[in-house]
Image (cartoon, rainbow, N blue to C red; front, side):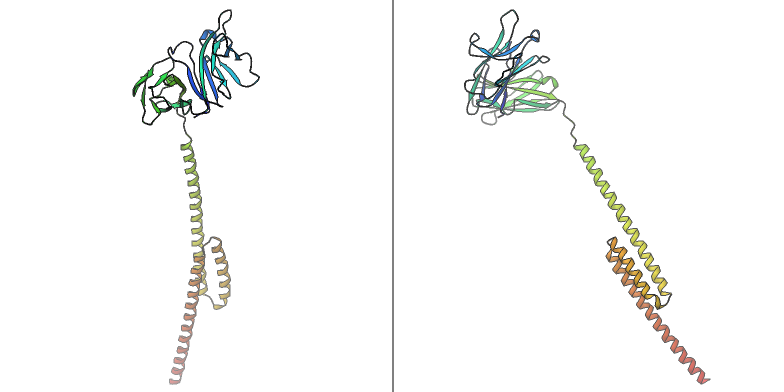
Length: 332
């Protein structure tokens, strides 16, 4: 249960309601008190005491409470002055919301706090809730009463059954869970903003509903940024991969040309070839293609073997030719 309870007390209506609120000891309670337009510039105050004649000033809008026990503020636009009572004890029970009338009798509305050490007899999960236009909102009202539960809009009508409407807004209510009165308001509109009352027996707890447009989340924007980052990484990797392939192909072409050049030249350049191969392999190591280096070495070695075989065959042919010529010379 929220540590900070909010109660709305009306001066003019809710006849028959006994303005009792169950609260937990040690917590704080804020009491928004409505007043009429003609009292905007009047002093407002909280009076503590069971009877009107015996109550004493607790805090006034023009005088702060030095102890910090009581706080008061006046919203002249909404025509609500709010009183906060801190560190509630079982002695904080009887109060009056009062508008000071110049040259006349002040006007006040009585309310009673039932301060207990355990769980209040009627409470909601949150006294201030937010709903979004066109959507639904669910309120769970916990209670220990055996009587009927009601969901009302203050100064308006109530829904006592399982289905009804308040100012055109559909309201469904049920008691599916033990001691939990669940209310759902559907198709919310901005006009539904205001104070509502969950009541069980003669105990009541108000809830303030604010209906606003649903904010646009940044999920889509974040998703686009994330996708852009991924595409950037992929593009960088693709460019790098293409560059490595191009470099590798060029190196292979150079090696093949070099091998062709070697085949056409003498054996004296073999050491130079090895030096060039070392340089090429170092280049391939830089681009992390050691397998290409090994492949080129195998190609080179095979060409050297082929070259040696060709030279050997050429030498043998030359010897045979020379022998034939020698024999032919003798025969002649």
